[in-house]
Image (cartoon, rainbow, N blue to C red; front, side):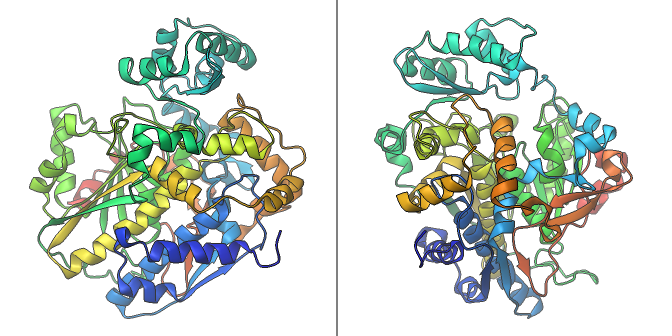
Length: 545
């Protein structure tokens, strides 16, 4: 593995790369705070991937921790250390697979939680004929193509002329494989994205991606785009009497998002003390399996933005918020009357965060997408297949780009909040799964010697291109029982939240923030809960506005 290489040393190198990125506009006080970062953990890589998941999430977590520590200096006059256990940071990437009650997965441990999670699944996502819509199949011209069901497989089924039917998952995959095999890759890409407005992509190598018109533009973009706008200067709110030196005490965040990446932005902000309101729409599906994890620390309210009543309520909430996190497909909320300008008409100092798949420039900027799409487009999936001695793409082993993009976004929000207290400015912050993947690729893959050593830890880990995310994550967690015994049982990685708002009186263990501060409390002030749980108590609006 090379005597000089450790996960911690590489995490430090990547942290310095972030701190010195001129397009991230890092304040000198953040660089000073980052001098007090301490990385600990197992020294060698253990995740079976060719690229540096562990080193990346550890560096980004330290980046966020340093920004939070700089805020604590500014607000409370305290200096403190930032501690990142690289194993904890890596386990954070397993996030939504790990919530448990007394060691048993929440859906198995509690019928009430399982039922409330199922409410978010409006389209029977795990029915085999629906589930198989999200996978990789070979096209007529010998390429691999990733189709995606977009939380509603019926649209893709209609495109492919696949009827509803009760079949096994293997039979369902054969049905989709036969349909995809009727198209050339470029033909299918146009049909899915431009005609039916669904998420799908050709599975490129990195070299092929960077040779596309979109890839050429994305290659010139930073890991995130930050736009400074004139706005009234806004001081930090007065700390509450029980702030516990929480860096974001009194900050108000509105989370208008689904799935994983954008909700992770506000989850980390909540762990640092922000008051977060998650806006759910009762008629729209969400990734139910992720909600226990990514909604930790947030109150959840149901608002239908397609109604005038819902729009009026949303305007009221936005009027006194500090941050809006938007994770819907590009321009979706613009069509409802909420773009950057109209949002600033409501709240001139609002920090507006958008997260999407492809970025906001280039010929694919209008396309919707997911982590699997970003991994297949940029070439991470093909690299993973090659790492496993396969000439085929392998789906992401974990929601890696989702969680890492979200944690990064929280750090950019913290810096924006700090800068807003020093000058009459606010910010638009654009996050992209593809742009994070480009940054990860440029962090350099492991050497061939390192990759061989990692494969040696996982002799029975043998996914194929049709192994989907639930299966591959299960295979990975099983392999890690031998490679890293006890990894998922470490109590230091978890935080307890109440299960009350899910309908269970017991406590739920969820993965805590992937960094610690030695003086400021980092943890969730409220639990997660079923969608709309805060509607039951109308005081939520009076505490926001």
